[in-house]
Image 1 (cartoon, rainbow, N blue to C red):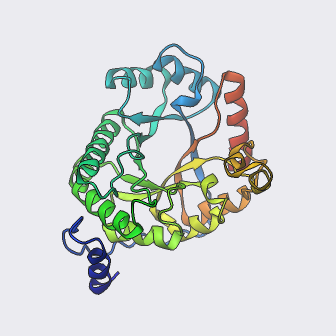
Image 2 (cartoon, rainbow, N blue to C red):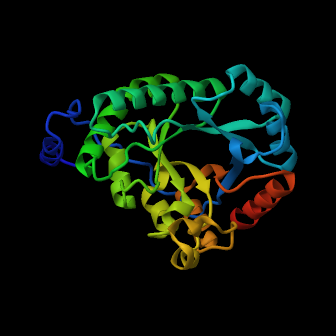
Length: 302
């Protein structure tokens, strides 16, 4: 985006969110051709139905064969509990979800809402550092009848810039997720949004299943390239969506929907991705989690 484009964009939002200057463009490294994809498998802590304590849940995940667990912040467990669970199980914290980003988005026109959202992101970054996670998942904005697209774009970038010094100090990246928030609707726009922030501490959390409703995940992966820091793994069925309703599209097991997993893993290999693949599906007891792990093995490779 050139200076004129940026001034035009920010001008549309009035004095709501004036971003500090024009940062240089961050250029992602070139794709690595012929590489093999190497993934570490994780699952959300909320998927683990058994276990009385955090340590118990980590031990169950380890028993099944997972390499890590995805946590959230703010949390109802302490850093001491997280570190003890890691030590007992041998697992890592794959990543951390900023759990306040939907209700207090950084793209809200209300400065007070943005301030609460910014504080939540700062807490998630600090927790991720303390817990040894790889990145913090962020939904940067939600566009709706009351929040205009241009407002959400400019305001969320301005707020992320305010948090970047902390992310850089901690060495913890912010990973922006593609979700159904009516925002950043194409991989080209997603890449542009990240690049305009001009920081190696901002990248993308690629949710494979979320794309299938309106696109093809392998195309997003190739466009986003090395900006991808983490993966969410889930499935989507266009037929169930059409027959039963939009959200029923997610009601399908891994490997039984419309995601072309061979194409996804090929695209990941082409960009040289090596990192976390986090299951985001319905959880349950040990038997259920074993099935999820086995399905991840089949669709992503061992």
